[in-house]
Length: 249
View 1 (cartoon, rainbow, N blue to C red):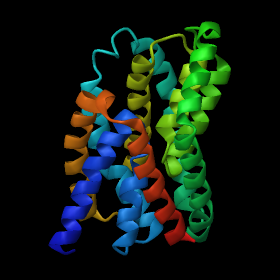
View 2 (view 1 turned 60 degrees about the vertical axis):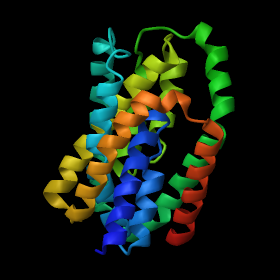
View 3 (view 1 turned 90 degrees about the vertical axis):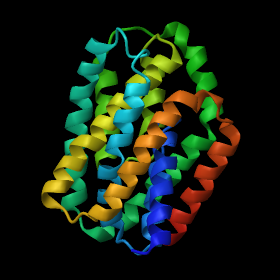
């Protein structure tokens, strides 16, 4: 790994850490960067998942005030996320690499559609908020489990999916839901990353660089995320995601 490549991976980790806290979809930054430097898709995904865990922790610490009073429901949702993430990680390790190459472009495309549709999605959540409730029902747990499977397998835009589910299911401020989302998405990365570390091939130098960058990015994202212009941020993620799709195809 050259110095230029190391700096690029470090910077990508910082950007991904910030984006994950503010919106979700940081994987669309780090994953294509690793692909561009010659890492195999599954190795890049595994290494990216592990590397982004510290950034999720930093983001959760930054949102600790918004987490006040949410302990019980976050714990309930965490069980569904953990079960889903373990399932998704197992699928990644058992399905052939060709399946990953075929499936992930579809995942990225779906994530990009969600990112582009985010303003309308936010309006939809606001319209439904009056009909939402506090109780975590079976349908919500099932939906969170599915996002956990997706998070364990790949994870780009898992945070946006979680926000959509929580916003429709729970009557609470969006920033508090975002704080819960950060915990759940981080848990999916942590659990699947632990499985990957035990049984999969991991590019540890890349993991270290992404982790270092994601810590600072996660902290900055939690502090300044509300000030970032959403339009340019979405445009950047879409551009990087398109590059990833092109490379995989």
